[in-house]
Length: 424
Image (cartoon, rainbow, N blue to C red):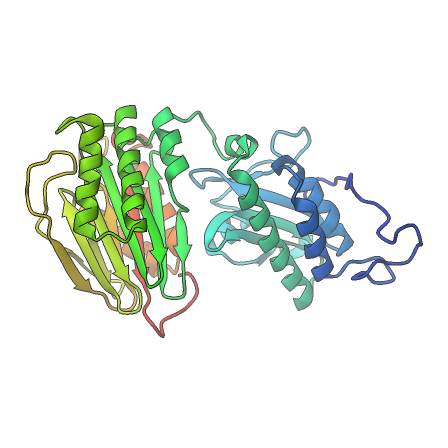
């Protein structure tokens, strides 16, 4: 399919009225890939989110890339929606399942549409999936395909630079109204995917539009990544306030370099100061991973223990004597535990909404079903974010698309030195 043709409203004579081609263009007036990126970068600073489709399409045509159309994924990654969504005569939404565009999004691969002469390219912020780009480039040679990849990278950067303040973007990626507590949670959440050569982190928050008491967070400092999952009491706005305050206190402590036990005690003090003793509480796992060595250290504040998956098959829970939930002030000691990871190990931090979700017949989803699905999707060669997307689809299908509790997963894969590979 081709994107709708639009004229570039800002296009002008780049040769200054002399008729000569500008630097970076051939005599035929075709811009090089480098010139295209420079023009986009210069023009993007004062361009709002709504102006990106015409800006990108107009500049790309100078480099021989026609019909460029930007699609962004909705919040639950079920649809790919054109950035010019809502414009009469614009391209329709595309489903992630069962379309070539969706396959490019799932696999993180650039795919040809064959006879149509077009290309689907994933839009990535680092390793976070934003959507896909459609480009009509005919029988593109390797240099043209490289230009398309670079264009996709530039478009992704422009989307990221503008989405924080764009209500247009936030309306576009939502398919229904969002609860107030969920609005708070998503505004505080870190990117759902992050990766370095030795580490991949992926997270999910469900139900996406009604999330209230669950939250996760992570942050990288040098060789150490700090991780946390919280499950606040209740499923209302007060639960959302509790979880958000816990995340803010966690970030404050980790940025001061505070240890795990002391960080958990600080979070507890903050919750008690705000809500009173035992009035609001949250369970949590707080952890650090030393990336060069693969040593995982964690404390458990009344939360389900982490799960370790090794070799894509073997699994076990990582036990550690739990202290009381944050906010109850029971005086139980906070103990830290350690586990030496092996290259390729995956650690799952999760909330009980995952394992305790029930089918219409009343049967729990369960820990074994949860971990088996992670193993199965990973064995299929799916990237970490796609593994989690499919896990959520399985969970929702099991629960007839209606979760009664928040369900959160934070997946950490440690690859180890010498085990760097693609995001898989």
